[in-house]
Image (cartoon, rainbow, N blue to C red; front, side):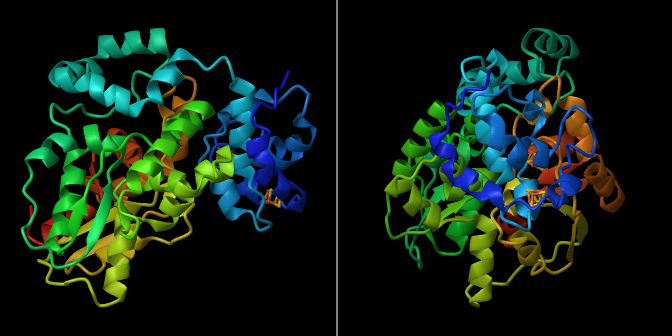
Length: 407
Ligand code: SF4
Ligand code: SF4
């Protein structure tokens, strides 16, 4: 039986469901429905089922929704379909979340655990026998994209880092996210170096996970606790902008914690209104003639993929606009719906093939435009694209860092 354990946090999304006019646009755009008959589709499991969910048997195909958010983005009536689905799925799985989902939603825990044994952890993650065992015991698909463990975290680097002695601009608070702390340390370092090159005083408070992986795995209580703690940590400089290199985590702070889990703490609302993805922040400087354009040319054509959660922020494609300013660089928007990873969705044994089918049009585009090099704002999407295509996939800040001669 369906237990509406998260009913209170669902009020906002529920308020939108009567706007549904059954146009089926969400059905035509849902990348999961397009590739599998196992999922009943956003309209059916969303506004249609929500009316009858209370106390009734739920459609378990809901578990195949990847939470990509495309349906909410395209709905002309403003129905919060993805949010309805996330709350309903959390209620459906409450009390019996698989061990696998408990583990893969703790990015910081995994990063901390792997750090002291990084070479061994990387050897295990690339060993076919070990991956077979992981698939059999935990349900993590043997071919799924995995992060690379590092022996040194971003915080290790930051402790030894000497910032410029006389910053010429104000302060910015930097949010690197868990992956930027443990798995994509270079992206975090490059972001700080670009901001400092531009004259900012960069503040990096101690910071934990935003809770997004927990939320998408239905662990709302843990996710609420994490996002509240993070909001307090990032609120350290009340007047400074908060700049992030983890675009999906920005979505959590901007609206998902509120819209899906009902978190309405003042500290979260304030942080959510101040936080900017780094490309958005730098493009804003450029729009105000406040970004130095003394870039060295980079002769390259590269495909760009906008992650679903960046699209959900409704700010266009700031990375594409920003990178156009670098001479010689041609960035081609792949215009794909989703790469298929959707956080942790595409690593799960029973969903891996669906994730690969969802991502296939993007993988084909990458191979067509530049099989060796691609651009994407979010870590897990980068790992997915790199594993599927063999291309090197970087955050947009990589180009700024290089074009400013910092690399
Ligand atoms: S796109 Fe919106 S209005 Fe159309 S069927 Fe889906 S939920 Fe209903
Ligand atoms: S969130 Fe994505 S996968 Fe889920 S119903 Fe909406 S479009 Fe489909």
